[in-house]
Image (cartoon, rainbow, N blue to C red):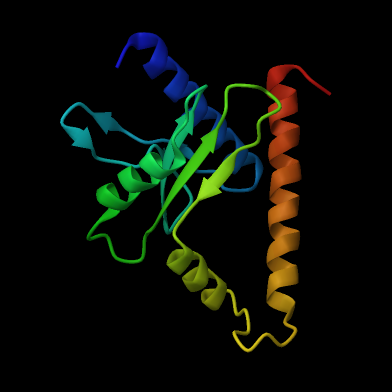
Length: 146
């Protein structure tokens, strides 16, 4: 992998960490990477998740998710996720995970599997929406926008 590609990856990892910090996860930072293999996820600071970041013109979410699954194998209570975004500023960060992990998260949040109305999904949606707004504001400030 060439230096420009590595630099782009680092930029993406720093951006994801900054968004997480703006969302209240103050310890979010880039993970330590070694040439022999990944000792840390790309981004640390969101407990319970192994985050691999993909950023650029040719992102491959499934490949990043496979990398997260492989790297987190054997680590109990860790959900592997790929966080990816295209190179354009208008592209949004997207999270990719397995359906089974999503079901597990929903159950832990108290979503009622019977389909009955629950406050949990509304609460989760509100929390996530607030985090996204804070993250976007952090990104706008960092990029010199609004």
